[in-house]
Image 1 (cartoon, rainbow, N blue to C red):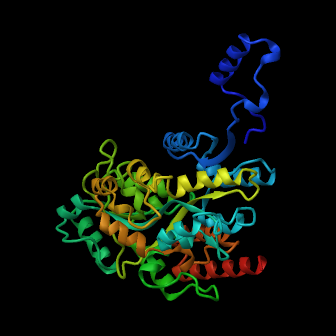
Image 2 (cartoon, one colour):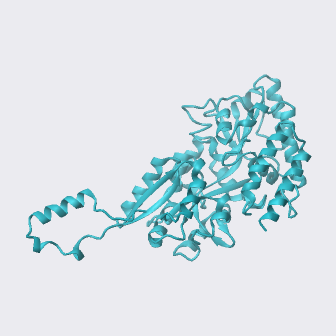
Image 3 (tube, rainbow, N blue to C red):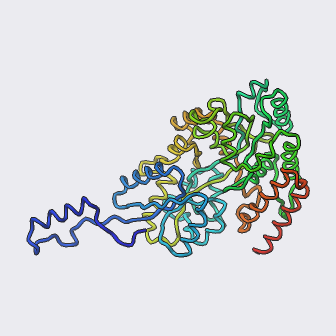
Length: 437
């Protein structure tokens, strides 16, 4: 946030021109001069900077008394940089927040529940969005986007192998991968995001566990039978050569790029990797037009997560910050959801409110990347937040997840058994929970 206010170049020229035609004593009194706009600061990670700048320009045009300064931070450095700025009491007003750090930041974020219009917006949110942005009973954000985990399926390869449908069970998934491999269509038909970069393989395990109707950790922080079953199934794909151990180094972005080569049958990952910037990119993907976003097997229950726009509790411009927050994460003054429509079309990021899929431009965009709008909407509506599968909002969870992801790589690589990996997961969770008690 700027501590000094300077007149813009056009206003400065107008003031100088006026002064040149008047005696000094007749200069306009200070009270009659146009009021300076209030400057507020938005902190964002550097995804589609031009799109965000477009949102800011649209907001400023509708709110001429407010100017927004944006600081863009590389995603990999975002959490650490925001923590430094908050501790240093660097002035800022609105920021992006990951739901997995909400529990750590809530002490200095502004609860939004009692602000004008917040209750109405909450009533229109999808359960996944609302629950992901609530901590200790208070709402701390409005949706930037929500996403869920699904299978991106190479329909061209499936047709060549004679497969009739995407896998409906985990057993069928293995049979399909075997058929593809036996026909020589792929050396290792299954590719996965495993390496931790923002998130990794633990979120895939969480999805598998949810689809089996369970949790990964029980109330005593023991790995559940659904967790063991998911870990064993996944490790077996590597033992059988259906997944490639060399791919264990692939993070979410790398694995999505690998799928775009056309050499794989499927990938279980976040839904936006099916979009026109990724698997259905006409410019850079060999799976464009044949990559379909489909539901996970078994009970078809999946997990989701949210990214949100939040307010710094230390903001000295809260009314203006709340106006920006509502514009970015809610509606404009005409009652239109502005950003969700743009994010689907330009960033393949799905929404946090009911009914967005009915917007014609959104529906057309979804169909262009192999997604059925009704199916996407149903998955978003039914997806469970991560904290229903793991202690996602525990202050120790982020530390546990990074450790657990390293253990996962050892299990998938055959260096630990699934049972040994589960024991290590449980032991570390209990130790961290005790430390932070």
